[in-house]
Image (tube, rainbow, N blue to C red; front, side, top):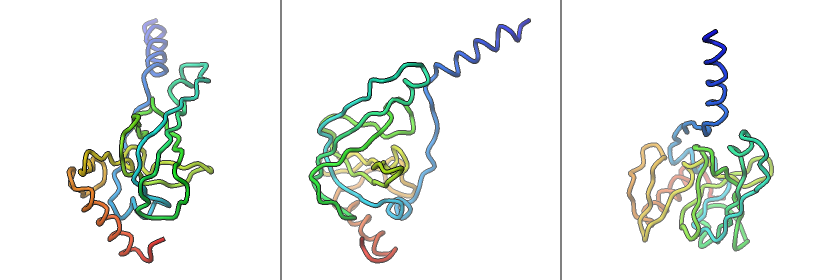
Length: 162
């Protein structure tokens, strides 16, 4: 009888608790290798898809961050902005705030631009410092200029710059 009471409570907790997970940290070389594009940009708009109908769907609601591109570090991109889909209720997804400035490691998945390694591929910029939290072997605080050089050096070690 006890199991009949415990199981529904356990099932409800599983359904209601937000999805969580961990990201396996990549080295800078792996991050660069996995990226088709690396940019510096500022978040100009966030739009959320309000179509969630169940608890499960609310955990995976997609939002779109529009990034105004300041500089393309690696790759080729002619547009002035890029849309990045993300899942604000998933712990492994990059999260965005209006006016936030960051370096983005971008790849493509199912025809959409996505951040490499979830939140690991979004590097916040505060003034001229970057906060590198989730790249294996990287110092947390670095100057923007030094980190950009490290990205370019990594790409040149791997072959011709795209």
